[in-house]
Length: 373
Ligand SMILES: Nc1nc2c(c(=O)[nH]1)N[C@H]1C(S)=C(S)[C@@H](COP(=O)(O)OP(=O)(O)OC[C@H]3O[C@@H](n4cnc5c(N)ncnc54)[C@H](O)[C@@H]3O)O[C@H]1N2
Ligand code: MOO
Image 1 (cartoon, protein in one colour):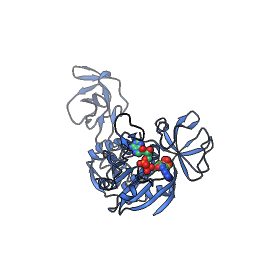
Image 2 (cartoon, protein in one colour; image 1 turned 90 degrees about the vertical axis):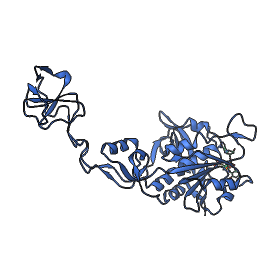
Image 3 (cartoon, helix red, strand yellow; image 1 turned 120 degrees about the horizontal axis):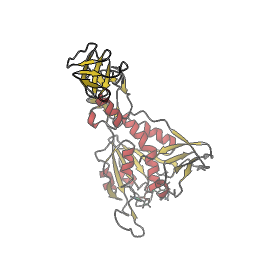
Image 4 (tube, protein in one colour; image 1 turned 30 degrees about the horizontal axis):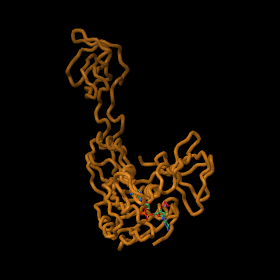
């Protein structure tokens, strides 16, 4: 067990998790999956010469005799529709509105060779890498694969994340009494996990009962995220609930979020423990779920994003600070309302700035974690 890892070391620990299984994923389920192998174009894209306009495919100079022949000789024209195959011998397409037909003879200005013709292979030759191994499949990339005629890919699926919400003091409706709070996580954490590239299961509420917490960790998910109960009080029962899990990080030198916990469940799956304070929970989720998801899926991690800051961001000597910031004209500005129990600063923010112990001076740049919504 390691206590108080640095923020960077805890991220590396998450990033070193073994990858999940590679499976054949049908293309209609592939958005968000991560490719295990490059996908190559099985043939040229597009795979045939086609018309970009409704009109006539023509061969040679005008006028052209309209024909239904599949092979044109100079002086012939063949009616075509947008996307339709053009006949052999055609060198250009004359759009409908540019031609006049009299007695089966088409007349128009002579088109430039190749006008309004989409040539086979002009988007990609056969064998071109359409999507590289390690890439998370966006809807647009999946559309490219579909266009290319690919039916399934060899990939790791979007990991499923289970959320286990502890806390006997949490209400889910109405105005809570003193000592009780309204739930902040239902609208927040599943959407954040989805935005980070996971499939989120509906959160399960287990109060502060260790047996219920432990039972909930057996959810059918690739990652278990618990919330609350990371403290040391008599009601903070996460450690009791972990049983035979191997605690890899019990505390991270970060603020907010220092009670963050990373453990390996007996079956090898990762458990990420978020502190109950809402901003702390989000800071921990955004710090460690992305490297875990990248590791589980074999995804190529994105480069760290740096952004200029508009005002001095003081550091915390004990470690890394995560500061909700919004974009101002000169760069990032702290959004305020950023105590660990508060959410209004986060709600007004665009990113979390990652501030090292020495702080970041106005005009310098800071690493940022984009907000996944
Ligand atoms: N003696 C110490 N006390 C505390 C320490 C410490 O080091 N020594 N650390 C503080 C820090 S930092 C944090 S963060 C919290 C960690 O608390 P837990 O993870 O044990 O979480 P809880 O005690 O269950 O709750 C903390 C806080 O969060 C609120 N909460 C919980 N669930 C929800 C929810 N679904 N929606 C909204 N708010 C929620 C809960 O009511 C508490 O206010 O410990 C500090 N204490
Ligand atoms: O995780 Mo705690 O929020 O640092 O207050």
